[in-house]
Amino acid sequence: MPARPLPASAPAAQGVDASGVLAFLDALDAAPDIEPHSLMILRHDRLVASGWWEPYTPERPHLLYSISKSFTATAAGIAAGEGLIRLDDPVISYFPEFEADVTDPRSRAMLVRHVASMASGHESDALFEARDRDHEDLVRGFLLIPPPRDPGTVFAYNQPATLTLAAIVQRASGQSLIEYLRPRLLDPLGIADVAWLRDGKGRELGFSGLHATTDALVRLGQLYLRGGVWEGERLLPEWWVAEATRTQIPNAGVMAGEDWQRGYGFKFWMSRYGYRGDGAFGQFCVVLPEQDAVIATTADTWNMQALLNLVWEHLLPAFRPGPLTGAEEADAALAKRLAGLALPPAAGQPAPPEGAEAWSTAAFTPDGGVCGHLPKLTAIDLTRDADGWSLTLTEDGHPLRLPLGDTGWTVTEGPVPTAVSGGWSDADTLVVDVAFLETPHHLDVTCSLKDRTFTARWRTDPLHSLPLRAMCAPRASV
Image 1 (cartoon, rainbow, N blue to C red):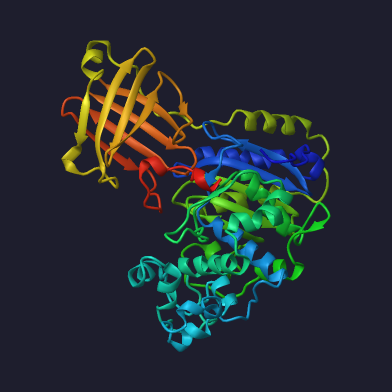
Image 2: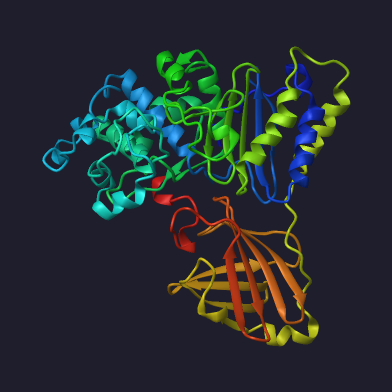
């Protein structure tokens, strides 16, 4: 948990109309393609609203996907302030071992500011080509790809550019990103344990893979909102905050979605209102300087623009110029609503009595030999003992046992934190929802007793190719 809780306030005292937040929650409930996991709102340095949809909880880390980039950029900003790196240094100068290999003049002209702003001169994401060119070292693979345009002239959302920025900080500091950030950012902000996926060289990915709490997101946003100062201590250079949160490279027409075409800073997107860090499937840290507010969300949705649209429609108007009077009833209603947030469990009935014996030792193989996006999931076994029913998923020879309760969500903490719900839709069909609680993702499983087969498909496809036993924060990096 954080070293010190964020100071809290009733919404009305900070000029926040609780009815607007309630309308936002209503809209989320009504959106069929958005599954919210958490919400935190800061206004005037006070926490005015926070809630987690059961089975998600405040202390649990969540895979943030590309908000990882904003933390990487923050590390770069601190390093620049300490004189460890300079924005106008050539990238190649930090990797002298590649000097003889990297001969393209545009690659050699690429500066630190270019990889910080997705302006390396490439016209598309170079991740897969970088892997093809050097599977062991993606930084080298990236630098071996000749940019078709001059660096600084074109935007491309390019994962290895951020990996390279992360590697520069690690090379210059002699530490991992987490080691470097712990005394300079994480501890001062009161951010407890975090974890980060690493590449084959043992470096944090930089562009993705960070697992942290929603509280960590809102604290990072507040630091930027306050110009790099936290509780009177300057953690980030003021000039870095100004540069990171303004357009460094235009990107109109490059990305889909209205809020992805308004310019890109140093790992922050410019928005219709304010600026933000965002990660796939609805991980957002929205900073609103005009409203003096920060909004953080975690979620599971393909439609990230729809989630932002709801923020603009309902939350933005809720920020009023001054304190509100006569709003005690709305504040109380919001507090009650936030305390009772929960995702509906998958529908299902208890095991049919007439089929309980057949189900209790049932084994299932993949339907048609293919299991959605999990080709290595080769078997599912259902068993019943004194503790009740459990489902065992076997992938590449590794079993993952998941208890299945009678009602609601059954949470299992380890080794992979999950929440399972569901039951029997009829005498021959078991339907189960498996939420991997440290990620945005759900696995939908259906078992057919008649055919002794199963299907298992991701509701949203994980962007990292990880086995089920690794669908959680990497414990070794905590």
